Every structure is written in structure tokens, then in C-alpha cells.
Length: 80
Length: 350
Image (cartoon, rainbow over the protein chains, first blue to last red):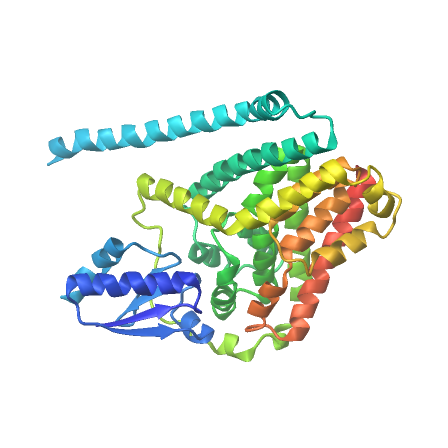
């Protein structure tokens, strides 16, 4: 699984990355993490509020920092 | 299944709306008790003369801090819950294909109701322009969004009442509409960084409000109150401290002499001071409140506040990623001119 964190490096992105890493670890998913900080790249995913979470090139969340359990809910069905 | 979930759903609803009702009642009680409490504590128990400089300064500080905190909590919560029905994505869809004029009016209005923070100004700008929303319409949105904000509305309402609050909202909308239309007319697309137009939007637009329950929306309201208060409390305390100092110690006619109704350059100076100043409505309004009590006219003060919240150096640096310096200069000048005009107008009619 490839997980991308979209955002220019503000606190929200750091918190989102933490939540995503913990969620993946708790679910036992093997994932590679990437940060996308370039505005043109971020915008090309068609999100208008940072931070954004992209799983295998699919935008699954934007504009807010979710809790670990919310990320788990998102990741679990995608892992199968 | 349904028989099992119905009572628990009802219990949940009772807990949710009951909790909200209790919180509202507690809010009212605190709001009403605020002034008598500080009168009693500072005047009665501590024994300061509330008409003395020290007494009135100290009273102003505590009374205003509590009053402003209560107003912020109430209005931010309400606004966030209402805004949870709106998204930037929906706003863009509504603006797509709108002509200038109608588009500018809609963009300014939507800029007020759409949940948006200036940290997302750049991706939103690219998302709007790359999907075909005209530049001028996009600028109307980006100007209105910080200019007419809920923190300022909450504080104006509490400190000055509904009249000046409506004036502020109306003036902010007009400035955003006109400035966006002017930028659109000037055809300044060549001063937008070219990559913006070349950005290909791919992927599904996700709607982040689908499936939100009332519990989620209330939770979002609470989180937003905490996150905004956490961000603005230093500004607020410094602002109220300065306000208290002005309130208690500044000579009665000091500010009125230099920036009062008789000085024709007062509004201009207020805006020139306000533009580079980086603060938010929470830091500025307690000072505005104290200056108003010292005899400064409302138009000058509103212009000062609008210049401070609408235009800031950090925002310019962010926007530099997508706008060339010339366009930033045009954007700042037109918005500042609009604010100056509004200031003089209010001073003339009030």
C-alpha cells in the first residue's frame, strides 16, 4: 500500500502523518509513506483544503486531521 | 435490529440535544453574571474604586476577557456547525461557469459561509482557477473569506451591537465584490504563475461532508472552538491588555487629537498602519473598543481592523507561490483603497 500525505508542511500534515502511520501499524498493513509538499502536485489531486490523504493514488480524505481510529476505518477496507 | 437500535438512537438524541440545551443555558448564565461578578469582586471584595484609572483598567481587562471568550465560544461553535453543511468543493461547483458580476457577488457571499482557512489559500486558488473559475471571481472569494470572518462578527456584535456589525459585513462584501471585478476587468491572468493554468486536475472530488451525523457536526464545532481559541489567545490577551491600558491611562484627548474626526488623513493612516500589522480580529477589536471610548470615529476604526485582518505579509508570501509580485501589488492596493473608501464613507454618514 502506498500512502501519500498532501500538505505544505504545516502542523496538520505532521499530525495526519502520525495518525496514518499509527493506523497502518495497528492494522498490520505494510505501507510506504510519501510526503507531497509541492503545491502544483497537491492541487493536481483535486483537493482544495490541506492536509490530504491519498491511498494508492485515491484521495480518501481532505481538509481535516482525523483520529487514528478514523484512519483505520478508511484503511481497513482498502487493505484487502 | 430496528427494535434494538431505536431506543438507543433516541437515548443518543436525548443526550445530544439535552447536552446542547444545558450548555446554552450555562453560557447565558455566565454571560449575564459576568459584569455583576467583576463589579462585586473588584469593587466590593478587593475594594478598588471602579471609577479610578487602576480600577477601571483592571475591571475592563477581566470583564472584557470573559465576555469576549464567551462570545467567541458561542459564535465559532454556531458558525462551524452551520458551515459543516458547506464545502469548498461545493462552492467551486456553484461558481463554475458563472460570469463575472454575478460570479463575483456569489463568490463574496460564499467566501463568508464556506469553511476555509488562509493556510489553504494556495491549493484553493489553483483548484478554482485550473477548473475554469475566472480569476476575478476567485479573488472575490479569497478577499471575502478572511475579511468577513466569524471572529470579527462575534466581537463586533458583543462590543458594538448589531448596527456596526451589519455595516462591517456589508462593507466587507462590497469590497470583495468590487476588488474582484476590477481585477477581472484588468485581465491580469498573465500575472498568475503559468503552472496554475497547466495543472491537470485528476482524481475523484471527494465530498467530505457525506455521512456526517449531528454528533460529528457538534464534535467539529467543539474542536474548532478549541483550535481557534488556542491560536488566538495570545493576541487576545495582548489586545485586551493594550485596550485596558488605553482605557485606564491614555490621556482623554490624546488619540482624538491625532486621529479624531478632524484629521482628514486619519483613515488613510489607519489603513497604512493596519496593512503590515499582522494580527487577527481577536487582537485588534479590544484595542478598537478602547479607542472608540476615547473618541475615535467608527469608520476609522473599522478601516483599521479590516486592513489588519484582510491583508497580511504572511498571506502575501503564501500567495506569491501562485501570483506574480505585480498581481499581489494590484490585489493589495485595490483592497486597501476599498477599505479606505469605506472608512471615509462611514465617517461621513455616521
